Image (cartoon, rainbow, N blue to C red):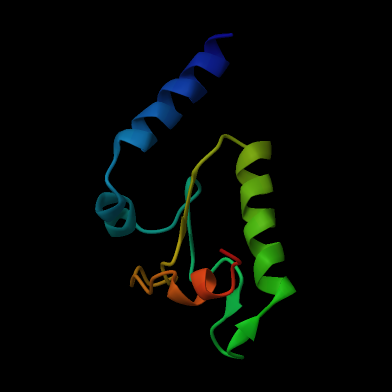
Length: 91
């Protein structure tokens, strides 16, 4: 029970951080950046491989100690936005 409470406390502290502070700290065990949720930036189209990478990142966090997945941020920390992803979704 004590371990579970420490995990919950850590995740609550992560949720209180600003997005800019998460980006500034960079990727690590508890933070992952993904440029897109669906859109392959190199190929210019929706990609199952990109979608699978998102699902795997989420599953990895769920099977470990949790974490923060920032979609729309390149690996180098540069925000690229979600416009391409949003255009692929039905209204």
